[in-house]
Image 1 (cartoon, helix red, strand yellow):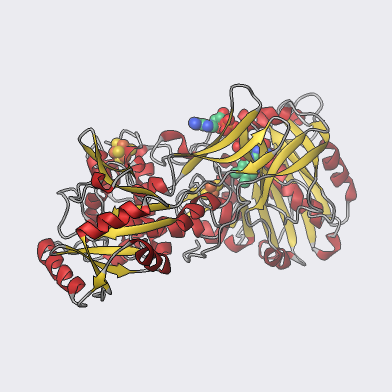
Image 2 (cartoon, chains in turn purple, yellow):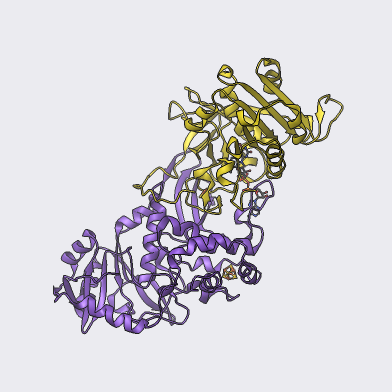
Length: 342
Length: 286
Ligand SMILES: Cc1cc2nc3c(=O)[nH]c(=O)nc-3n(C[C@H](O)[C@H](O)[C@H](O)COP(=O)(O)OP(=O)(O)OC[C@H]3O[C@@H](n4cnc5c(N)ncnc54)[C@H](O)[C@@H]3O)c2cc1C
Ligand code: SF4
Ligand code: FES
């Protein structure tokens, strides 16, 4: 990423005060702690924010694309209306991998048909990112897929400096948020450059895949590589990898009546292309009947099919699926096996 | 496959269906029913042949169903439903006057550009079972305009004579004569059947066609495609002259839910009608 010139810096104290002020007008979600686990959740006070990043189980996509969401309501006498819910929300402290995930999902939900439920939430949300100074753990591989810097998906980006943060402004929404809620002072202009230098030193030799840009081609040529069966034969088809993925967005849709049968709703729920019936049709055919085919499909969505559309790897290297998988299956290992780095 | 993003504004009605009233119901077979419906809130559906609708029964769910009638200037349209699961079985319990909810039309269908390449050609429809439902939207468009085509051949195969869909219309089709022909076969003949018996590929040698001047439309159960495509290619038909219409699981119809994906292709968006030459390398095709 090219070096950005920050206009403002903010002290940590002023930042927390700003969030407190924003709590009057927004629901604020941030990295926080519950029963000793870190997660992204709605906070009631800025004191609940955890600044020291540790990878979360679920990605913050859940604030734009909830696990269950009512999209339609109707009554038994046939009154029917679209249900589109969005609250003014601040997502605070989102990291580059997940910001790239946001960018990709925003595009996917706007592509060809603008998904009203998703896009309403985007419109009502201010995203404040925090850049990562160092690699968060051994499973993360953002640096392999060009995701260690955010290419989009945020309104404001914070870079850690001595007693606070330098602020990069990406959108008008971000700049309005600053003027309304944040007490800042003028930046020198070189803060981000020095943060980036520090980051580069910390990331050291961890560089993108040599053939990152050519991954779609490589995956196209390696549809029958032995790695698919090696990894696929271990897969339990549990779908955990998909539940935790920041860029998976497949869903199922189902109808439910309330118990009194007077009102009903249509609900969409996260679905997983790794589970057996995902591509089964009524005539009995299942177009991806083995775990190997399903793994091939999922990984090709990330590095081939969708990568061509979004012009960036759709796996953002957050490492969540690697941590979640009981069978130790890793997109990074698969990419390496088909020559991503050789 | 489409490799460019086409970012759009929010469409507040994307998942909101509209009303259609059942005007007529006919039992075709034990499992298949014909429905004529009328839109209540718009003057016409505005579809092209080969497109489909997402049809809902409130409280049960939504299922993709082909539009079975030719494009028209009125608010009525047809569909034919095989009772197979939750939504389709519920549709079979509905009565004339009941309301169903629809979204669409969706998919590419046989768009104007494709239709114009068919002018003056021999149209060869190869249809198995329920495949007649989607292809009827094209057959019923081209048969009344048959002078515009060199010839129209419809090959139709089903399990037994009891499984013939649109039986009355098939009988009419067989009587038109001139440049329109209908050849039928059943997998298993019973006492009422005097016609051909055997799989649908046995009809192909019975028709006279110049493969370069013929456009084939193939629709049927998944297993049928392999055999029919092989038979057509053996007759030296260019792959560009073959169209297939595919079924996949579909939940949204608008390129989001991922269920219909065939490698990189969203069948609900870029299909369900495909030119064989454009997709033959797709390993999830058949
Ligand atoms: C473009 C297109 C056009 C179509 N046109 C027509 C048409 O004109 N007429 C028509 O009758 N049909 C048509 N179909 C097929 C029709 O959409 C399906 O039969 C329908 O979706 C079934 O929905 P349902 O709710 O009735 O069944 P469901 O309750 O969804 O189940 C039906 C069957 O699907 C399979 N299935 C469902 N869920 C699972 C699961 N979790 N695991 C494994 N298997 C499962 C099973 O075999 C089950 O018996 C079309 C499909 C497409 C994609
Ligand atoms: S790859 Fe791992 S997490 Fe994903 S479905 Fe298979 S076993 Fe489950
Ligand atoms: S049906 Fe949902 S993506 Fe095609």
